Image (cartoon, rainbow, N blue to C red; front, side):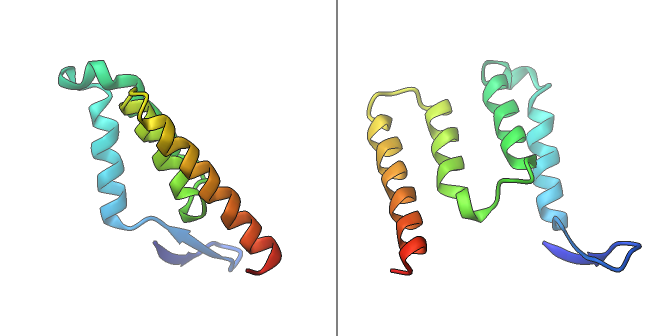
Length: 98
């Protein structure tokens, strides 16, 4: 991320050049005939990446969503549960300053 200023003088964050290139590459996969079977997964990844409410604070959740979307195996249920437990313990730790 890089910083910039808006016309009203407020500081704003902007994605790096590498991040913009990576997002453009991901978006181009939506129309690629080689990735048609993964189209919904790619669209979901783009949606998650461009959602301003997502950042490092919920990265484990985002990775869990993408992993369960891409890998529909039962063993990932264990991963999903462990991520939920980790998120819950992080919230508790933050709430109680552990």
